[in-house]
Image (tube, rainbow, N blue to C red; front, side, top):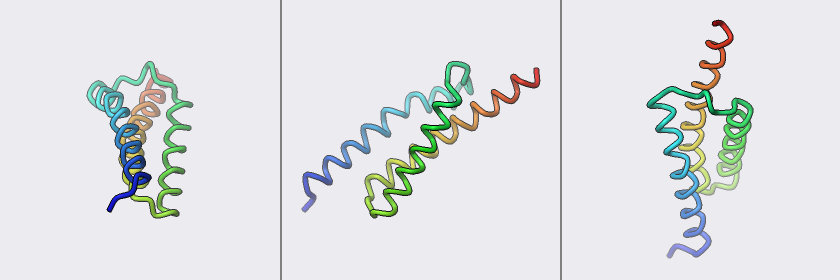
Length: 91
């Protein structure tokens, strides 16, 4: 039987990952990162990576799955932001 703690962890993981999807989808569709902070996305992506490592360390499936998905999305957005920043510097 699933515990209340597990239910809360899966609910939290689902809500936080799902809340990130609209920004990720919009950025991937438009490739527009003008309004996004490079520093914020860099720190956010690093933080998500740390949560993923922590989840692996304690073997918490909810933390692992949520942060693996978010890391892929945040990493994609960060890549677009870095690329767009470098392209702007060349112009």
